Image (cartoon, one colour):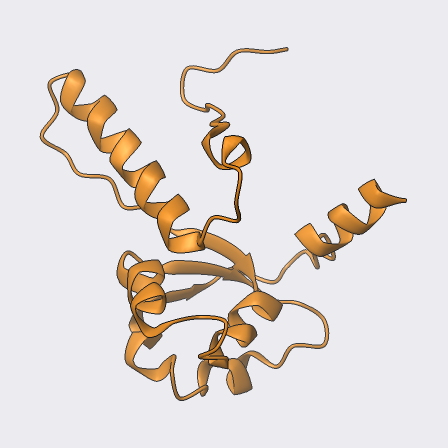
Length: 127
């Protein structure tokens, strides 16, 4: 394996015995980076943003799946969204629950269509 001075891998989430809500993963990563910065004498504070496909963001309408406090934490530092074929970004951005957070939703350039998704990766691994 190659080593990097600026990229690392955490096994924290996969070592947990139960499903971990997204907001807890974001908080863990942010706290880990902030601890690292403090240990190295920095007063800087990290922002931790979820990067996802528009299909995942579209699912934020579901209050049964995404609690209000989860949504607030996930969107506090912002979210970077990759447009997906078949997902209307204008429609997604007009989801009532997302409107208060619109300024924190960053749409990534769609110059290179990307059909990779975690759902597809899981499906391929299970085959």
